[in-house]
Image (tube, rainbow, N blue to C red):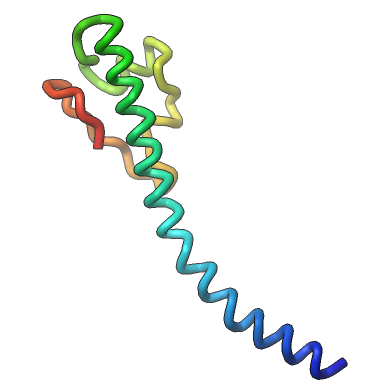
Length: 88
């Protein structure tokens, strides 16, 4: 029984630090995926109105994105350039 507990303890000690390092990677991938989704909505707006939206707020008011989609999962706001319609 002690041997089993020792093996489980060693596995936990090895696995837990690796899991905590992954949270930054998950936030980065989540943010890049959100940028791609919002960029697709900017392009859809451009196709429908033949002009880029003036801001992300305009996309929200037209129902293309929600308020939650204006920020990355880590809390950083998305940057938008209306002259080229690019989201970053």
